[in-house]
Image (tube, rainbow, N blue to C red; front, side):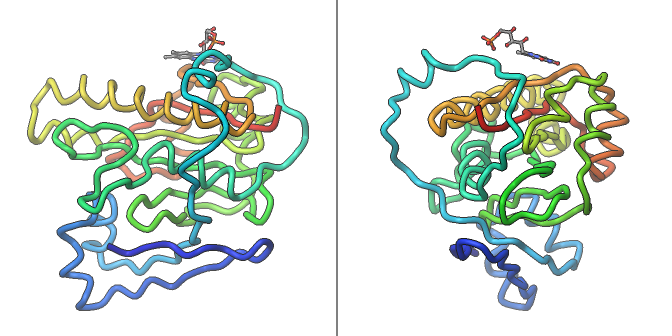
Length: 241
Ligand SMILES: Cc1cc2nc3c(=O)[nH]c(=O)nc-3n(C[C@H](O)[C@H](O)[C@H](O)COP(=O)(O)O)c2cc1C
């Protein structure tokens, strides 16, 4: 499996992933989003994220007890390490077989995770898609899109004021191909798992977060520049407290 490397403290390190013949052998162990990408023949400029930590001083019980929706944030940047940790909590790979932090029906992984960055140190403003397989980011749009996303979410100020907004989308077909109509239920359950992971991780990092379900699907899809087969499900504004 391809792996990300540590970034330096300041510099944004772009790693050119070479999609060559050797990649074919790796396809078996890559989750579907990465497979789609490689199958499309695209090379990817991937920003390698700092490796996530696996331990902290905050117990699960403490995180559960302290979790609260936070909708106002100071004008302070998140660090790239914090964003990395939140994305890992959402869909990071935690086993050599490709299993992730959140469970997935049939291990089919229908979720795609984006980050709309507007105030993250060492990360240019823009929209990025998280690639679990390499723990990295692919840029899908440049510039601060939080205002547009806020408008798409009925003007909710939390979306505009957060340093970054994590956006969950799903490719339903990955799950319904196996489970039929019931797969739709599974996808919705899965986004809850992933979002709660992010929520508890945010608490452990002493960050503020909220989940947002009130938005125009079409407008969010347009702002985030999603693929046609992706449907937006949940927004998570995150910032310092
Ligand atoms: C499915 C879902 C959708 C939600 N949508 C929004 C939303 O659009 N905007 C918002 O500010 N909060 C939203 N919330 C957060 C709830 O308002 C919040 O969880 C509730 O008030 C309880 O507060 P707590 O999270 O601090 O325990 C949503 C929560 C859920 C579970």
